[in-house]
Amino acid sequence: MISQNFFKKTAAILHRLEEGFLCLLLLAMIGLAVVQISLRTFFSGGLLWADPFLRYLVLWSGMFGAALATRKGKHIALDVVNFLVPEQLQPWLKCLLDFFSFLVALVLVYAAVIFVRNEAEFGATLLLSVPSWYWNLVFPLAFALIALRFLTSCVTDLLILLGKKERQKSPLRLVP
Image (cartoon, rainbow, N blue to C red; front, side, top):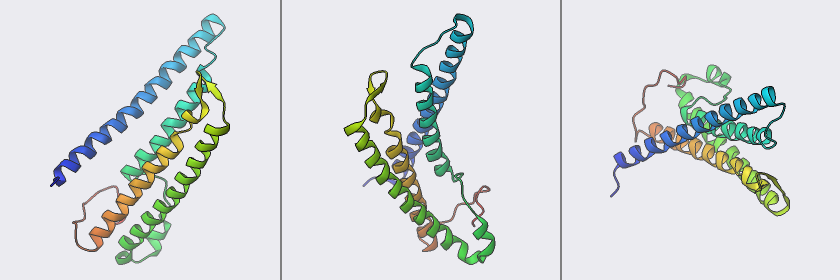
């Protein structure tokens, strides 16, 4: 049987890979922007493919940055309800909101898959001789990752509420 420790180590490795990927995207954006600015300043020209490529890098870093923010619980959230709901109901509300967010992310995955499928069928080859749908794969990938993170958060919340798991103290969470 696979131990819980194995899953924790695997998750830690995947988290490091995700953070490393985002760092590489950032370094690539900075490096390419510096090269492009230098070429324009000193040689009155630049790389034709650099600006569209930078836009895609920004898109990819933004989408995977949103997935990382979801993992850390720092995504955009409206927590006004936390102040209106009694404290004993807040854990149930968090579980419900995580489940609702999971469902919304699933709908976004579905829409993104349709978008990429249409791009594959009707799209063109835009940048660096790569079909446009490759560049847009970020949408279903990132939304699926976000959905998975909300689902795991919902399951964790439910296990805590049912007494199967202990609540971890975190200074960043408003919900007890």
